[in-house]
Amino acid sequence: MNDMIRLKIKRNDGINIPYWEAFTMKRTPHMNVISCLKEIQKNPVTEEGKETTPVVWDCNCLEEVCGACSMLINGKPRQACTALVDELANPITLEPLKKFPVVRDLMVDRAFMFENLIRIKGWVPIDGTYDLGPGPRLPEKKRQFGYQLSRCMTCGCCMESCPNVNDRTHFMGPAALVQALYFNISPTGEMNSDERLDAVMGAGGIANCGNAQNCTKACPKEIPLTKGIAALNRATTIHFIKSLFDK
Amino acid sequence: MREDKSCCTQFWLRKLHSFTGILFLGYFLLYHLQGELPYDSMLSRELFLYIPLTFHAIYGLWIVFEARPNFMTFPLIRNGMFLMQRVTGLIILPFVILHALAMNHSVGYDSEGWFLALWYAGVVAAVFHLANGLFGAAIHWGITVGDRSQRVLVGVAFLTFAVLAAFGVNTLVNF
Image 1 (cartoon, rainbow over the protein chains, first blue to last red):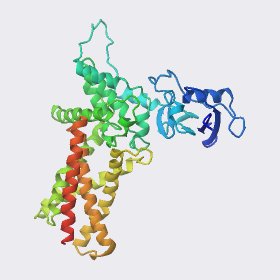
Image 2: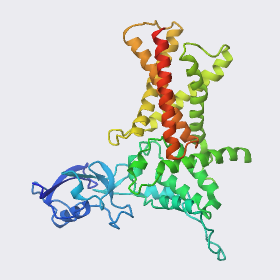
Image 3: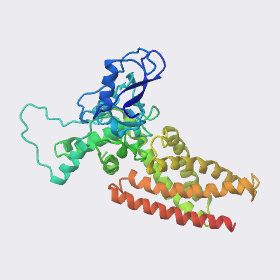
Image 4: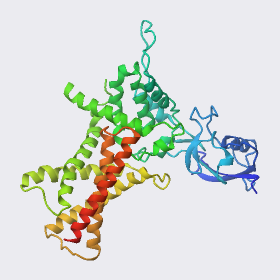
């Protein structure tokens, strides 16, 4: 009985309204959701024997560092590459993330997240006419905290779990907020920290966080997102009060 | 350098929301749970109660509208509190209006049945909203950052809820 895997996949061809299709396949050792999808690609026939189009999905690194294969697996946002079939309840349901526009089937467009990284100026400007030399060293404690934050792969799980990331708020979400913190704690990034704090305090910024704290639980990289947002709350509060009197 | 001039509006409105909630409404509730009114003059009532209350209610409705709760998909404790904060807010608003009308004798006060049930629900909801609001405000203002300090605030919020709820219910029983 356990030799077969059943997958229920939400299909979206861009023309018809989304519909479900089910597929069955033989279980082989160490399968993950990606390898299941590849099996369907080899032979795109539903369990009723109807020929269909191969399921479209997005993936890249296959080791949970790129964030491209995020989808809802049995209702939970996570990466398909690290979703091992042996550890999943059967049948496995696959849906695209709901907070992003669907390109096709399980493939979504996470451009909103990358636009937000631009808004919070998620970089260190080093362009100039001469070599600026090496940056200053970080205290070890700060470096370790920064490393935790740096593991963000813009996968969208935090966005998916957040009740305030939606069409009403245009909230940039935990990922972009915490990246602002990441750049602000580094000694070189700190030079532009005011600009990032301004962006974080802007429309769709930190004010939209409602402290549901789902993001920390949903993050596959275990980034301390709520701690990061709280630290940013402190930084923006101080920045806001200061800027009132500096004007 | 700023992208839009109106950038901080939501930011300081949110801050004002938690500020009015804790300082003015929290203070008033502490007093009022004992069945007393803290303000004697009309002016102080306007300044310290009606204006903050109106702002808190209207902006609160906006916050409720903005959220799309997902407790069924993500049944986590804090997510439940997030939902409850909004639900209690929606209970308190009609309760406060009805309560004020009843005290003005614009609406007849009926000390039985659903009317009394609503009274109890309103008091408990208000106390919950304040207690959980303490936790939220501590994060919003950047006071509690680390996990441990947030856990301490959970304890503080729970104690606040238990003590104030007991107080409020006791007042109602003896009303």
